[in-house]
Picture 1 (cartoon, rainbow, N blue to C red):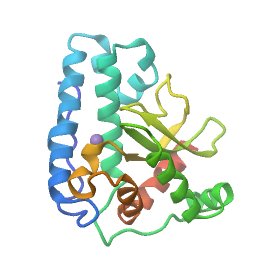
Picture 2 (cartoon, rainbow, N blue to C red):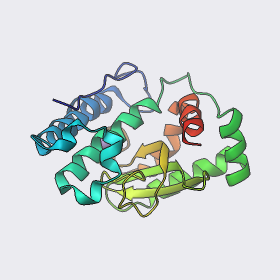
Picture 3 (spheres, rainbow, N blue to C red):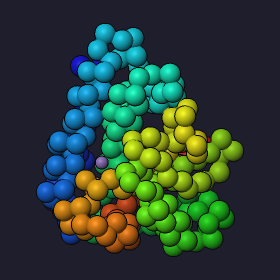
Amino acid sequence: MPFTLPELPYSYDALEPVIDAATMEIHHGRHHKAYVDNLNKALEGAPEANESIESLMGKIGSLPPAVRNNGGGHYNHSLFWKILLPSGKGGQPTGKLAEAINSTFGSLDSLKEKISAAGATRFGSGWAWLSVDENKALCVCSTPNQDNPLMDIADCKGTPILGIDVWEHAYYLKYQNKRPDYLSAIWEVINWEEVGKRYEAAL
Ligand code: MN
């Protein structure tokens, strides 16, 4: 099987109380696992089964919908787990990322507001993103379902450096219908060091 479920870099309860352990366990162990399993099924015997997930994203428009949905799901969640960290360990953006946030959005708070608004106004399921676009500028957008800015068919193309899952499965056990509450709480567990690394790699 070419694609595998990555281990979480922390325990299921590490993000409490922002994201509860039951949500993490179901989200990683069942939802993400299903995307990986269904992606492998969809690519069985296909030459694309040996490509990287990033490479598949770049030509997703020419691949079957099952690859778009499950490959997107695998890419998005693999990124999501990495840009989160245990409660109490969070910091602030530093270096080049901090400078770019300030020059593009005015302040970190205004960037957070913009991403939270993108997630809150995404109707149905999807993701809110901070990406580096083709001009190397930071940009915020949201995508439906398991799409992402790396996909050739995306309205807002770029290299994602931070993604927030706004599917109900990401927050419903603790926050129920209050998606904006989840979106304002999640900033406490964002791994800005990882986001900063991804920013510099995308430049
Ligand atoms: Mn999810």
